[in-house]
Amino acid sequence: MEPALDVEGLEKTYGAVQAVRGLTFQVAPGEVLGLVGPNGAGKTSTLRCLAGILPPSVGRVRVAGHDLAVGPVDAKRALAFLPDEPRFFEYLTVWEHLNFTARLYGVEDWEPRGRALLEEMELTGREKSLPGELSRGMKQKLSIACGFLHQPRLILLDEPLTGLDPLGIRRMKASLRRRAEEGTALVLSSHLLPLVEELCHRLLIIAGGRAVALGTLPEIREQLAGGEGDGASLEELFVRITSAASEEPEAVGPGPRAP
Ligand SMILES: Nc1ncnc2c1ncn2[C@@H]1O[C@H](COP(=O)(O)OP(=O)(O)OP(=O)(O)O)[C@@H](O)[C@H]1O
Image 1 (cartoon, rainbow, N blue to C red):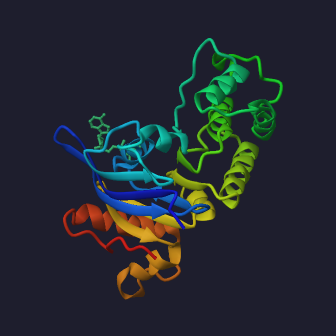
Image 2 (cartoon, rainbow, N blue to C red):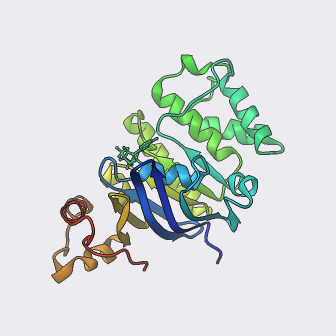
């Protein structure tokens, strides 16, 4: 099956700062990949390169078979990027944002889907609200509703639960799980390790821009030498792997390994 996301040798440098150093991984349709790493590890830079917002310095990104550098429009049509701090048009209402998104992505007959998404995101009744009248959590939900509208093959999420209340968190997890069950690939970056552990099929742990572990949680446990990882929670593994990586920046802990 063609991967929803295929990343090969991705690197991103900002002047003298090497934020992402040679990431190679794939995400299958219906798979949820968790992207975790300490502050400054390169997660947001990676997501922005995958979304086509930042050009990679080196490497190739293919979304649903479309090379982002060669066919950026087709690649971008197949994905949605949901940043942790979404930006909106100040003078467009909630409904107008959905309308605008539908036109941008050429979604025909978008209105029933738009209504269903507002219902799913508990925004029914806020159709005429302007972004300035929405709470932080509501803005997050509007961004997600807009992102889901064109039924992307790949959804990239940066801290998707920011600002959501406990019920909102539960509903959002169910929404993300449902998208994955329907065949959408998800890449989810978060510092909330219990969320990552609960939702993600595989994990990509990065430190200093490098992949230091890639696989399912049991596979990553196994990668830790001498069964050290036996029974360890993701939090324990995260601390061990990323501190080993920061102590030995050029010869990091377990090498990334696809299952
Ligand atoms: N626009 C930029 N110009 C210069 N350096 C940048 C820029 N954006 C990020 N960086 C640097 O790149 C590195 C990776 O940053 P990035 O934001 O990708 O990390 P992150 O893993 O998302 O961090 P956090 O968990 O704190 O959000 C950091 O050293 C950061 O200072």
